[in-house]
Each structure stands twice: as C-alpha cells, then as structure tokens.
Amino acid sequence: MPTRTRNRSIGVSQSQFAAALLSFLGMIASGCSADSDTQTPDDPSSLCASGVLEADLEAGPATGPGVDPETGEILPPPAGSVYTVSTTYGVRRAGDAVAERYGQIFGAVEAQLASQPGLVALQLAFSPSCGSGRTLAVWASTEQMYEFVVSPPHAAAMDAVDELVEPGYGVTHWEASTTNEMTFAEGARRLAASVASTR
Image 1 (cartoon, helix red, strand yellow):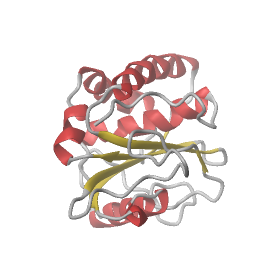
Image 2 (cartoon, rainbow, N blue to C red):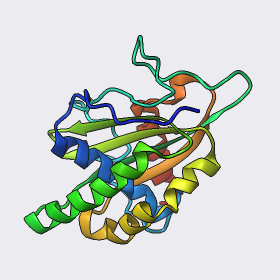
Image 3 (cartoon, rainbow, N blue to C red):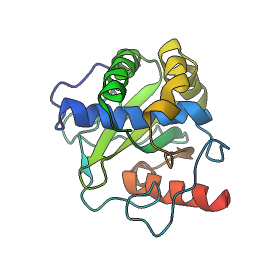
Image 4 (cartoon, rainbow, N blue to C red):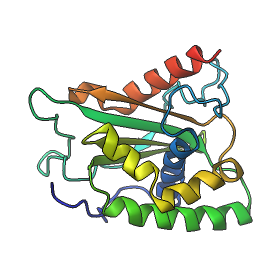
C-alpha cells in the first residue's frame, strides 16, 4: 500500500485543521471504544453535540491512498472485504496556553499520520457555529487503527485530551463495506447511538 502524504491543498485553515485533528485525538482517551467511561454524554437536544451533524459543517477534501484522485471520493474496500472507519467529535478548550499545547500535540500527531501504515483515507471538518471539529478516518484494518492508537505521539495526546478538549467529545468506530458507511453523517448517527447506549 502506498505511503500517505499530506495533501497541502486542504481547504480549511491551519487552526481549523488543528481543531478537527485534535478532536481525532479524542479517540485516544477511549481507545476508539464507542462505550468508554471517559465520554460525557451530550444533550441530545443540543445542536452542537457529537450525534448531531452541524448545519454549517465545512469538510475538507479526503486525502490518502484510498481516495480516487479524479473524483476526490473515498474508494470502497476490495470486494469481499471491509475497512474500519473511525470518527471523532470535539471542541477545543479556550485559552492561549491550551492553544499552544494543542499545536504541539497536533504537530506530532500530524507527522505520525503522514506515514502511518494502514491509513486509507482521512477527512477533517469544522463547524464555525459550534467551534467543533470532526474527523473521519478509514483504516485497512482494526489492527492497523490500533497501531496508530498506541503510537508515541498518540499516547502523549491521550494524556492531554482532558486538558485540551471540552467534555462531551465523542468517538466510535465500525466496519464498513460501502462508501455510504464512510461519511460524517454516518459518523454522527453512530455517535448518537453510542451516547444513547451509555445512558
């Protein structure tokens, strides 16, 4: 599988990219588990919650070796197989010290992701009205997703999540055999189900 390289044409600003990427780091606090005790359930009536897709969500392009260069769409897995899809939602805490630490964590994780084996595609999104970031990562296998989870940059980020991300962040993962299952809408639906199952 080819090595993933960073797509410098991503259509969101560095701070928006960092916000979305740090929400991705929320997965480390729960080890990608949908039913982690560390999650704080969201208010389902809130319009800014993990299980509610934001109306103004601005998604950057999908990047990675599993993205069709002609269309920019994530390609389906080979016939008879599945990918593991992970999604996260989070809002960065306010403050200059948090922003600085956030940038440090972001840089290390970004470097790790740039060469992470098994990463098929990554897409980031940001909601200006909610100040939230979402990620959608497609992995060749659950095992390769967990190899990233236990990597040193990710482990360091795990220690910093509660200091950097507001309560109510969400994370889950699932297996997908079609591209319809690899969307932010599907991720929000699964996060809503995950939150509901922990109540």
